[in-house]
Amino acid sequence: MPEHSAGIVLYRFRDGTPEVLLLHMGGPLWAKKDEAAWTIPKGVIDAGEDPLAAAGREFAEETGLPLPPGAPGLLGDFRYSSGKVVTVFALEGDVDADAIRSATFTMEWPPRSGRTAAFPEADRGGWFGLPAAEAKLVKGQRALLLALARAIGREP
View 1: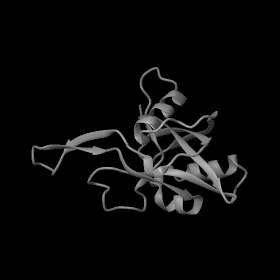
View 2: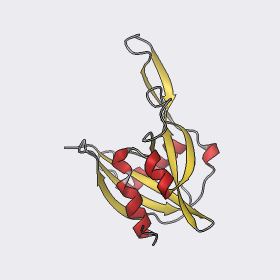
View 3: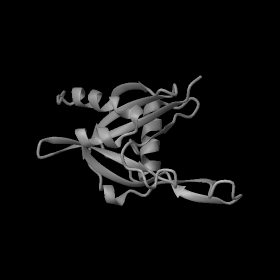
View 4: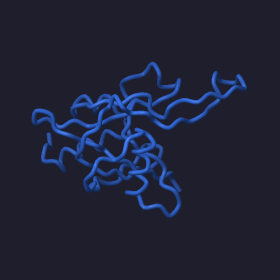
């Protein structure tokens, strides 16, 4: 069975233009990449866990911030080419992207060194208009931008 994750796409309006909060993936493999190296806060749904609860938990873990108040709406399920499915919810709200402090993960680094190092899951966050977000997001998440645009009445 393919991995199933859940996430939140947080959006806001600035001067009437929608922007989405994206996180730049942390760790040495992503350090020098920018395009197709950003993601929404998301993660694996634990056994028996409600997808919305998982999305809220992952938002807090990956940003270090509480989920803004409001009722997230379901955008849908998005399938990556790997088969992984991400259930995505949208929530209008605002956070300070400069205040993001992600949880960490460990990996062997440098490769084959026998040493492990800790890295943030996300090393920074930023707000992007929908066209810029499309270039920043990993390929498997780009479809959620069209779903969001439709949901907020900003279909291209």
